[in-house]
Length: 500
Image 1 (tube, rainbow, N blue to C red):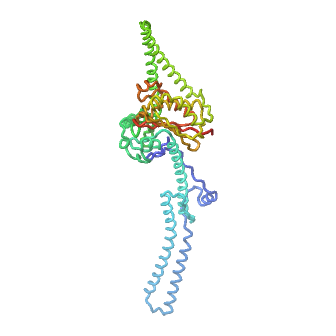
Image 2: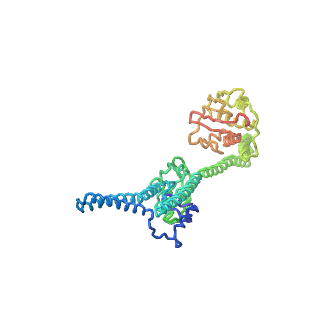
Image 3: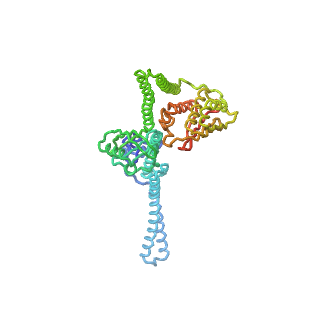
């Protein structure tokens, strides 16, 4: 990374700027004015000689007029009057000549000074225009060449800096650059977004003044002290939990170098790791429970359970129930795996939405009737989905069955749909027990249960909502949930209306 990008760090030495090419006529004119040795000797300013001769001519004429006047007056005036008049005329001529000479000298200097001040302000397009043929013209040409060289070099540096800053801003990783004293030199946009700072808010400040993070400040101090590259994982809790892998290194420079920290956001990786760990723990638990029950009842039957036919029949019923549970878990896992891997692709067709939901409600009617629940359907007859009929039925069965299971007796379940451009939004709302806010973001994870004991007693495998989410996303749709404990839940599906 180029050090010239960071304020306060001078650019590393590079190739010397190329001299500005001059026109052939200009070079030929200069060569004609220079002797073979290349140095300009002292030259008589021939252009100043005519004013001298003019001054002496007027002085000579003035004195002749004075002598003629006194001769005509029979030399009645004293001689010193003549001398005074001669001196007065000479003084007047000298003043006029001095004014002429100074103006010829100061005007080029004034122009050079003005142009130099404009160049100092960064206005490199101004040029000195002096055509005197002497040292003043040479000085002006040198200043013009210097302005051209400065303009070219500054443009190159500005373009390089803008390009590099654009690259830094387009990076996914956050970048923080400090000097050896710990002052912030540069931050890019992703870093500012990660830590909630505005553009330029940290520049010139010490890192520990605004980055109130003990592990991060320790990492910076250790890198500055040891001058060795280090890597460390840090966690931020505000405004929401984030995990970063920080790579810190020291770069050498003309003025003590700088410290560069690159922040890799590994929050999603950590989340996936947690989901995998939870999945392994949950599937182990889900399989271990029925297997332990099956093993226990088989051992009991083998020992003495066969002597009592009634007890043996009860044990066999329990074994049947647990084996069914194992089968359901394995089938759901295989089904979810096929959806995720693309082995079970979506085969879309036009599906009448109201007819589809009425059939599913009819299948679940005995369960709702047993709990004296009221199910209402408010969907236009002409509304149609573009979906896989078999898979979309599985989505509705899962959601409606959950709504019935987790809604108490005499509760209500409402189903309605609305059309928005090329999509249809379907809402399934119940008056059930609701879902705590902290669990809402995880209910679509595999085997995640808000109330494990209650869910298992109701016969769920813990994979239903995960399967629903994957089927909806395979259709190019989205699913979300809104809920409050004790006030019920609402699931919102957004699905395509027809084929693109």
